[in-house]
Length: 240
Image 1 (cartoon, rainbow, N blue to C red):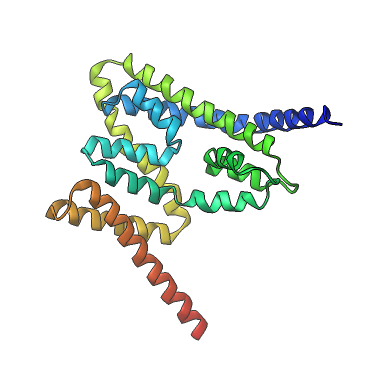
Image 2 (cartoon, rainbow, N blue to C red):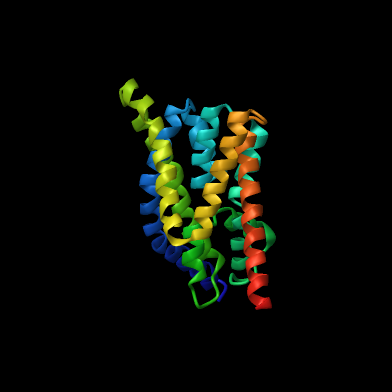
């Protein structure tokens, strides 16, 4: 009986690896692009891969590259990353109700590896999710992101200097590519993006605050205003 326990855990781990393979494949081109852009912003290979190892958050890493290019300070970058990734608290809390009982340090490890994609796969399971399964699912996705970040940087190093410099434009194209699908689905997101752009432009051109803090403050202000309007609309419907 005792010998069968490790075997069951390995089986669950292997199942997680298998079901996470599609996520790993999907991460590859995005991580490659991140590596390419990291090279153009002046980061070293070590710094680029370290960010993927420690931060492991696609959108935040792209934002960080843009802030690096603007010469933003560490405090602004940390706060922006926290705001962008705050949803992970909710995802981890939700998974905690679905995953088998486990010691806190193991929970901390698999919580670090939770992304939008791995959460979606695990959350759709009707049965209790095992720790071994989550470790396998998160590990294959994590390794893909880290490895292809380094590969992308290596490819970028081999490109002609003129092409490396022009890749900086791809960073803005990437942001547009991430934003447009959300704009089509939700008017709320469109209003949020428009307000943030307006606030950021005002702060930058008036030079009230630095460019780094302009992004943070514009994001917070637009989010607060949109939520206030949404709350007032809900109250209005209830009164009617």
